Image (spheres, helix red, strand yellow):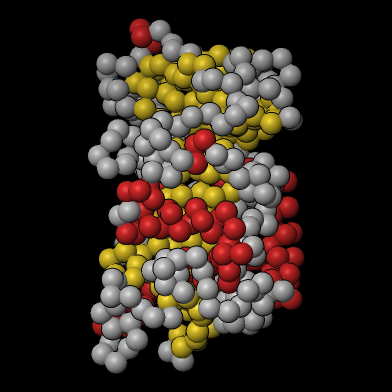
Length: 401
């Protein structure tokens, strides 16, 4: 069982602080029509969608606009909180709707994201609407920053949503992990590195994603505040546009930023991990260990024990690391598994996901959770943990139970 008390308390404390900050500094750095895309964009409001801010190209192009709905940092009701970032997305041919009115006060809820989707679909079908037959209602994305990311998680099982984007956020409580298990559409994480207060929670969520779910994890060392207030949303704005162009417009060139053997972000300042990403019919993308993590060190158990296991350090920093393990059933189905994990001297487990650990240092026994013990022949389950010290040099063996 994972414990998030320290991280949760920190994020819970920062949420109201962020809400206050965005309310005081809600006017964007550049409030004029703009964005780097081919369709200069601006924001507006609608009497039929109160308490929201709508970003769109000033001159709507003939090509239909996919829809992107957004939860603000701090769950702030100021729809201009991340204005530069959202206007940048709109300028590339998207209808973007943020929770909260322009410079409004108070807080928002996840239901407001659903209201945005309902409104956009209705406007697309309403004669006389600015958006009549101008929207691609089959391509809808949801996203949010910090507390807004929690709002995005809450509605991500809406069957109309094509992709979820989580910016510097992660679930605060184990009781909310059902939101991860029900994910079926591609998800992208964009986190501010190990100094981001949401980093631990985001990595915890990453380790609990359903097997086979297409997923991207990108960490840029900018901290929790991101780059939203920079011109055109800075680097976060750039990668958000590329992810949405790939997932909502089918732009394979944009997709090469995240997937394929020539993944652009994999050789940039980002620390990247990938799961099940396929670019234009290619094989699923591997998940390289971000520098300076050591190379994966697989530790297969004997085949006669019914299962094998591998261990990989996914991220390493001065005082800690994140590691993942994969358990794979042998030639016959198994009903449970037990790992013997031997950690190097000085290393200790602080948070475990998708497994139950007995002990935290030295030789540690890890058993399956109730939901991932039954594996058919050749099937795998993933688990992992955040630890202190250095993760390199650990070994793991597996026994079927």
